Amino acid sequence: MLRSTLREIAEDYTPVLGRPITYVNVPLEPWVERIRSIGASAHVVAHLESMAMLHRDNRYDRSSDDVSLLTSVPPLSIEDFVRAHQSDSKSRTSNDRGRSSNNRAVRSG
Image 1 (tube, rainbow, N blue to C red):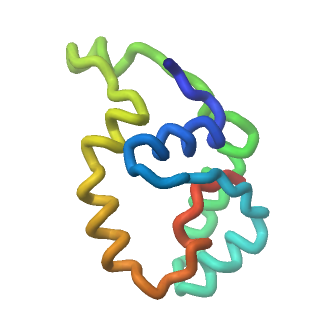
Image 2: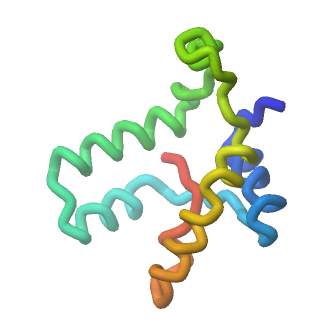
């Protein structure tokens, strides 16, 4: 099943990780200021801000059969991707102890 909203995509993480994952729509300007505050270059800030705005405006909201056509392998669903990378999430979570939970939100512009 194709999940198209960021809220739906966040929901796909919940059954795999066994804990609630909630989409949080972080306002663009505070998010950009946070990126600047950690010392990201102007180029990186501009690139991430542009991508966030494109996500906000649903400019990435599309799908195609390109992965299957190019690789002869069907693309993974969100749940299958999360399941395949579940150990990455666990090791990152243990390394992130003490960080604000705001740093882990799924977000758009």
